[in-house]
Image (cartoon, rainbow, N blue to C red; front, side, top):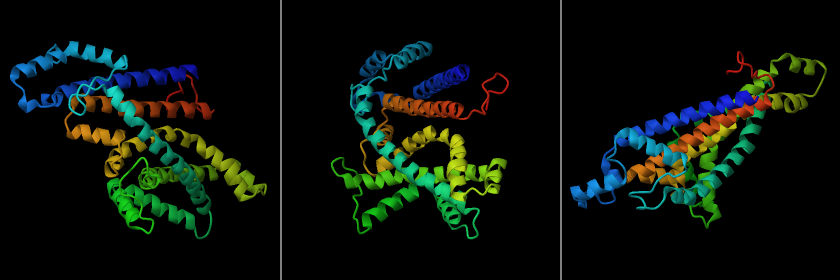
Length: 317
């Protein structure tokens, strides 16, 4: 177990290091205007002085070394345009609690709705009319086929024009303004959990131990809940950390749509304003979240599934 986890951690570290290097090189190819607040009003001498202060006049290998030392010390640098000379760590610390709050609530709702829907679809697939299975399949296909931006706009429009008159824009002091963005973030994961749980439960229903339980006369509801659902949740567990990433990536559009002052809206804003340093920092933060999600998924899968081998020959998946 320890060897398996160490191997995954080292692989994740190497992946993150490569991403840092690639992001660093790509940002050095961007126009230098993104390092200045009022580039058009500066003289060439002022531009050169500022570039020297930022270390952008140094050889590329030296810039990379200084950048790696800065990143691994926990310093993401300062904003050059969005909030001039303000630490990016400070800006992120202000924004990330809002995104986490909305993200975690939406994930809890997605689990509370997606898992029961998947379980009912799996049970319904063995009935004559298969009503829940057909309903869930239509819902999943619609969510998977329609671009997310389209149904996010539809949710916003329908919610604001309904009898509830929900606010179209987010306000921290108005709890009703949380409803539409949270539902927009949750709906994709609801379909995601339902689809995979249904698949794994149907796979489990065809195995010998389930046939034996049915032959013994155990009630179908009990078999579904105590056997199929439990075993189907084991492979599904690895996707739950990844869904945190999907929620955060979805927040890029949702936060902009509802004017939420969180991490997603921040990334869109700094890209528009060409704040190179902040774009670089936020891309690395999202990359780190992605890698951590995959790492935790692998570790949870290994802990919960005793069938996974940790030997050198059989440990890879």
